[in-house]
Image (cartoon, rainbow, N blue to C red; front, top):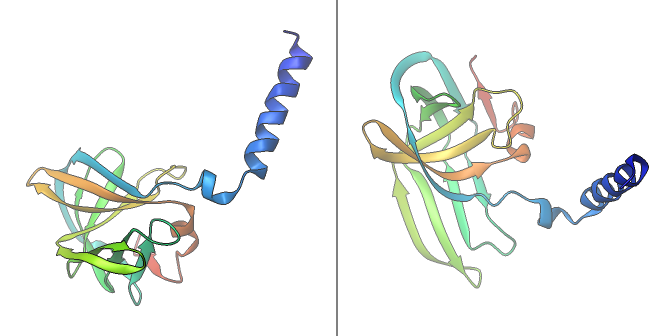
Length: 155
């Protein structure tokens, strides 16, 4: 295959990817990823959620999460994320045919990536053990676009 032919194939792939519907490219937010952490308390580093944030997985929604309003205080870190404890439990919901069929409130918080360029710049987590957190909800670029409007960081 010639260099020009390879370049043409790459160009077609990139163009098709850009033109693809947003729902095909959307990040599936649901996850269940265990992450070992190191406890780290620093009240000066926090995240403020203004008025609460609600996220749904699909349209129509089958799952949802609500991050309550308030100041989330740094409690742990790992190589990739800082972990901020929510002032109230996260609200997790399951829907079927537009109706809530299950709801739980679980202590947890908001993870923020330490890296400027990250496929998952933020996420929701719950406690697994003292030294582990469980990432349960990935937040993508839409989350970053809300910085300064729905949430802000002190650092």
